[in-house]
Length: 501
Ligand code: ACM
Image (tube, rainbow, N blue to C red):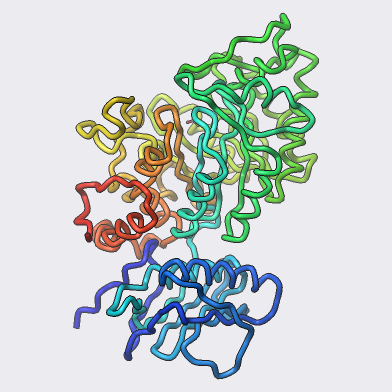
């Protein structure tokens, strides 16, 4: 008998269809948990997510032995290894989600949500299944550029919801660049006072206050997502130089920059104000960040020679480490030899970047971990194909093409552990999609570039290679469009999939 695969993205490690009828999900379904504080938060999230599916409030109740027709959430150490592992068992009489951690429970709830299908009289049916699941990689992220165009708290919360739906667990925010400064740093008020009101093409810009950043971090944390803030140094710093002219040797602050060139701005190691700037800004960001990582950028510092580049990257890394955080940086930081507690993010997979690849392999062999964001597969700001023009007909077309095009299948069909020859596969910590916003000024534009490709990258990051294949993915992802429609988010109906309508 041909058993249809359950339509969950990313594909679970194991899923067995069980005999017996479906679980019927209605507005009367309750979520039951033990009264532990960390469980109450996740139960409230579960009730909210399920309530939105059934269009009615779902109650959270405390443990009632023997209750039927309920969704039980339980912490358990009787699961396969891994912080994020979960087990979901669905039957006619109830649902049980078990995990080692609240983050694992969130994954189980998301799987439950994806399994629910419309049934008569407004109910939803969840087929009887047993899912045992855990991620392949510990780091499954999205890097989002807030500097070229700014997106505020509400938009970012929507993005966090999408990340959670595909079991991604890192939101990396690119908070500074030539075109604008996007995070309030209390000890350096001029950064946002002078440099947040600019964006590519003369857009209005904007920034997150420290309080909004904290709110976003907490919102993400409840969903099992860590925010990794990036302050890009020692290049990509025109907004910083505009705010603090003391960072320029002649003391003259440059004008705001609203174009899309890269590589022209730089810090100066010999300028006395530089060290204090790095200490204040990276120290400030580290202390605003409960997560373990701070990203120091490090890409495309084309106006610096290697020696000064390395000196500045080491200075930045020292500040981050002094605040107890691990250092993350784009692939170029591999030249700085930062050692074991570093994550180096691979991005430029063009032939011309061979020296960076060699340095990356050497850094990984010396113990650094590698985060895979190859442009040709995970840069979701690339066009889907050269013949399709997305975006407002009156405005600029969405997407760039220097690494692309990146169609859905390109985002799906690649293998992180073997992509870079010579890289020790065990040093790969995970996979991160990236969305640069030079051409993306609106939320619909942003989500059209993310969806459906984010789901493909999520499966690369979550699912073991022997459980992945394009033919299966294109069938499973076909039902996701109706979910995005229900959320009211724009997406691109890639012709590579027969979308369910
Ligand atoms: C990058 O795309 N400049 C990291």
